[in-house]
Length: 235
Length: 167
Image 1 (cartoon, each protein chain N blue to C red):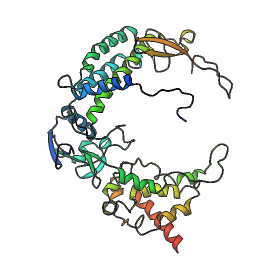
Image 2: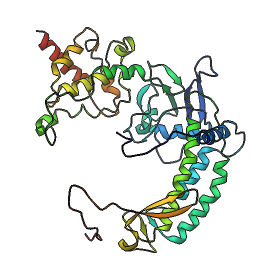
Image 3: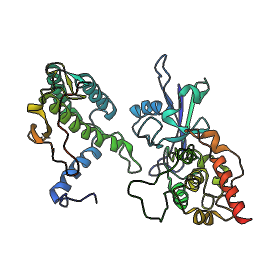
Image 4: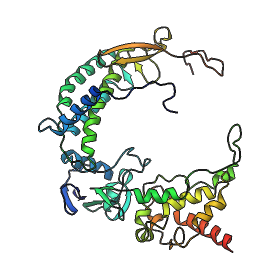
């Protein structure tokens, strides 16, 4: 199979280019895109990409595969190529490229940090743990599973446009995860931080984030809930 | 927090030198085998000779294979000398580390003449609390195995008598 990979080494290249590899895929078996990168790295050790758990849990290998953001380790080649015979692998769009498929995630993490992605509760901690009813706990389903792979935010036109001011889908999903948590009592403070024209309201409901999330999460829906909370608060 | 109860010292000049020798050898390597090929061989040896179900004869054969692999891994070639996000260099260093871990695993398994949990020996099928209710400690420089007692003195709860698990 023909695999075309985005290559850029800041030490030697003045600009990025696409490099083609002809890769022999095993007969009768569907590899994941990450396995194909492994086969390439075997013949060309100079190719750089992040990977760790190889099972869609760590979120290291977010990349753009045949035009669609996804995790290399859980994207089958057959799905990525839609039965075709060419695989095109690029780094996540919208972030500075460090080398080859490795992007600088700083902007993404900066936005994530802004939403204070941790439980805030200033009441004294009980002896055992802060309890929650099963119903309240269920409200967090679909919110807490995010693995921070950045597939969503780097697929979002609003984030491309205002990566410094718009929190982006990943950060906002986490913001709502704590707004919806009955054990957190900083709701007012959290909403105050988000109450500006950019942090939340740059979301235009394009739903590119929903289309690519490897964990099947729905940031747009969470952003809708935050919008509602902000508008109710303002009214 | 992490350092609590642990004594540590700063790296000595000779520690740093040792690390630099290792790094420089890789950076200056021009011939030798590929990291990926050697890693695959190492994986195969560990899978075939030191799986969950093990026997002494087989493991001793595996140990010999690991010994034969050591000089080859010591002479591995770094295929990418770049200083920008070089994952090839990390994988080469990891391969050397993997061999150390593999050898510790192999010799500890071979030395423990009993079966316990996921260490299931076909030549020693019974759990042996008399001789092996202990940690295995592997000393890489002497390639030697010693035992260390397990702490059975809980501070908060009554101790749980160790016994053979018959479900």
